[in-house]
Every structure is written in C-alpha cells, then in structure tokens.
Amino acid sequence: MKDKKKNKKEKVKKIDVKKELNAKIADLENKNLRLLADFDNLKKRKNDEISNLLKFSGEILIKDLLSVFDDLDRLKSQSIDVDSEVFHNGITLMSDKLYKVLSNYNIEKFDSLGEKFDSNLHDAMMAQVSKKEKNLIIEEFEKGYKYNDKVIRHSKVIVSKGK
Image 1 (cartoon, rainbow, N blue to C red):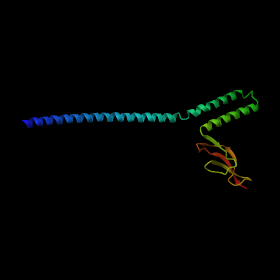
Image 2: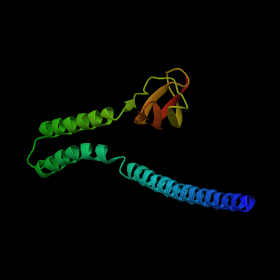
Image 3: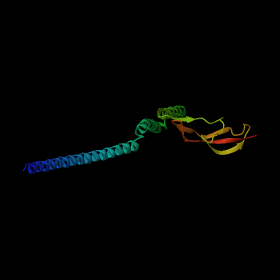
Image 4: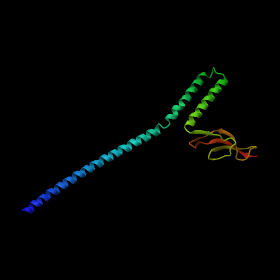
C-alpha cells in the first residue's frame, strides 16, 4: 500500500513538473514571438527613417539657396531701370552668396587655368597649338567642383599641344 501511495505521489509530481515545464515553454514561446515582433517593428521604423533621411537630405541646402533665388527675382524685376554697374554688382553679390552657400556644404570650385592637365580633375574638350608647354591648360570652359574632396564635376578645358 505504501508503494501505491508512493507511485501515486510520484505520478502527481511528474504531472505537476510536466505542467510547469509546458507553462514555461508556452511563456518562452510567447516572449520569443513578442521579441520577434518588436525587432520587426524596429527594422521597419529604421528603414522608414533612412528613407526619409535620403528623401529629404537636400532640404537644408535647398532652403539656403532660396534666398539667392529671392535676390535673383528682385534683380530681375528691377533690371530694366537699373544701370549696368548696379546690375553687375547685384550679379556679383548673388554669385558670391551662392559660392558661400556651396562652401558651407563643403562644395568648392577649383581653378584649372595654367595647371597641368589631370584626367582625375579635367575633361579635355580639345587640344590646340600654343606657346605654352605641352599638357598645360590654356582655357577653361566650365569650372570643376569638389564635394568633400570628391570631384563632382570635372572642369572642361582646352589643353596645349605645345609649340
């Protein structure tokens, strides 16, 4: 009889342990599902943030350029009544303002006239005979620009063939 009671107690203990283990498994599965859902939400949120950053990355630059366009509009509306010196000064001021905005964003123009031709910086539009030494830039059609030391536009130049 003692053996039967003992066996019954052991069976009850085993059932209790089994229920406890099943409850822990269910709890862990639930936690796992919640963590996976949290991680998925975090990924989606980060992807949305990155998309918005890329989508609106130029917003600050554009806002800074708007004041230059306002100046251009003012100059355009008054250009009929303004003498050429005042008009030239207005254009110069706006040009300087534009270059300052570009400089604030680490965009710098570089001069090429008189420099040795470098295919990393220059696009040769043509070569012509001149009194200057060979491969020297003798004319510049368009300035080149760098953004954080990366060339974003090569200067368009005429290169000397030499004498």
